[in-house]
Image 1 (spheres, helix red, strand yellow):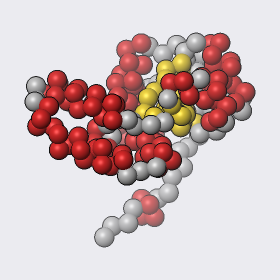
Image 2 (cartoon, rainbow, N blue to C red):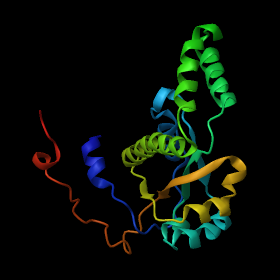
Image 3 (tube, one colour):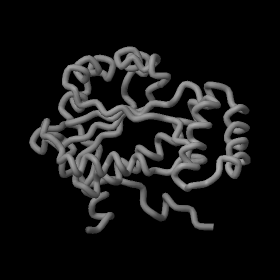
Image 4 (cartoon, rainbow, N blue to C red):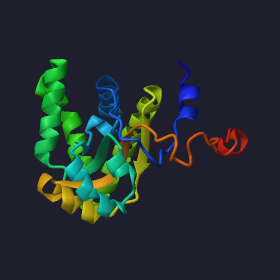
Length: 209
């Protein structure tokens, strides 16, 4: 399979047909998101996997009633941690120690580096930093879905405060950043289906030094 062919196949799907995504393919997309790189490996964000139709109906008004919200098989909500606490850093360090069979003391310097980085940022800066990590993971999800021939739509067109309220993200210590609709295209009703992909030319896009 040519990844270039698959990337040309994918587009930001505007209408979906409600068809369920194969569970193995869907899990592969989630795995790619989970395995995406993040700064220091901390992954300072969470991903809500929303398949419940009633929840998505409640989401629709704060997502400007875009049809993908209810037509997709699932909506993934990428959400930043509101705070990166010493406890969450300690948990991460413990996970490294367990996974690599390493003594905690050997990771003390790394832990202090993370705490120093986090401690030097305001809450607003931390959310921005978390968002950058989340968007890398979102990109991995888009790529994996293209390989699996599953349609997706990355979405920023929503009211974050409204969505946070609908999903009660405050109680989870989260703030919504972006959405990814996952499903299958409605070939008959999506005006972009079959349209030629338009990108800047390589000569214009890349600057070789």
